[in-house]
Length: 359
Image 1 (cartoon, rainbow, N blue to C red):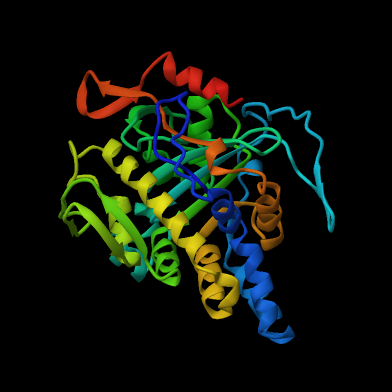
Image 2 (image 1 turned 90 degrees about the horizontal axis):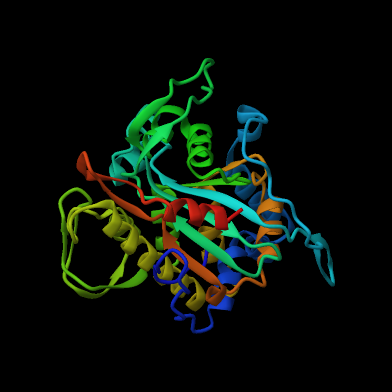
């Protein structure tokens, strides 16, 4: 997604686009471009590539798990948009919960992020991406994982349900109940319906950065974080995938060591990654294009409404009119918890007003 630097909850994002409309379109259409690139390899290769990329995507049927006891879907008055060579594209408002996690157990995730077994999975990054009706504007809201929330009772895949829990960290929702509980917790705390769910794992993110040839990031302060194993002097650095992932996970080596500082780094990294995508002409290099598309799709878990290349490409095409200058990045308003200085709670009424504006 195309985002700028973090602003106050209702402030305009800083315009550092530099042709970012093109950046956004390229980023959102990576999966679609993969099909064109695959065709260059020949009909047989294209069929195999489509099957491989499509089969990469994992999905969870969140709608069936949660049923009807959810916030209402947004009512749309926008007419579907059309293109000269395609069926009408959807144009209604959308809310998408995006998580960065180490949920897929295995050697790579364990080495990169301490993923371990799936029962120990965590959601290190959480963003609610709100796309305005007409799909020409968007707001990306970061939720600090250290936010204390009331976690609702969530259905479990094995049967039964979790108990309601009070004053627990936001990221425990994913740990105890996976994507379904993460979505239910976000909907409970925001009263906003999540239309889609996208999860990106550690290993896939690192592979994507490597497939793009690394990413150049400028840091404002020295970083020395034993937990993320990253040491950088203030300045400009070209990072490989493992280093970029470490930057996204860094918190103890900057500022006050809280999750709030990490959110700032993540937003800086996303912008730098978009710049790298924009400067890399993937269509002229089918092999690199396939590696990037394979990394993207291989890192995804989605809801069943986005679990195919066709659905992902349709979403990307519907967002072609969305530019970075019309996209705001904000953090959910929070304050330090009075009973635990290492945790935060929603700052009211500002937090509720922000969520209300996304309905």
